[in-house]
Picture 1 (cartoon, rainbow, N blue to C red):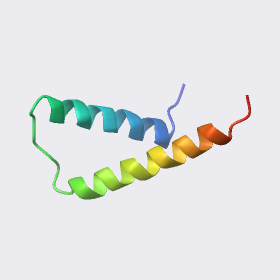
Picture 2 (picture 1 turned 90 degrees about the vertical axis):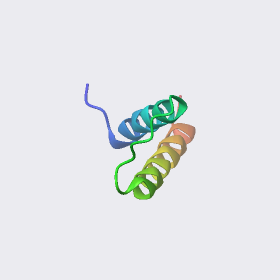
Picture 3 (picture 1 turned 180 degrees about the vertical axis):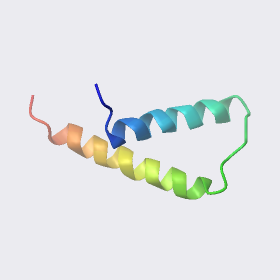
Length: 54
């Protein structure tokens, strides 16, 4: 099973949250851009899930 971009973004966000909760702060040079991309992907995923028919 291949993961799509929203799923990868959600996993990335979870990993970032875990690292922050452990006090590990070794952000990549462009952390703001990464967080913005993750937020946009999560929003797109949630919109897709809310409009999916069951």
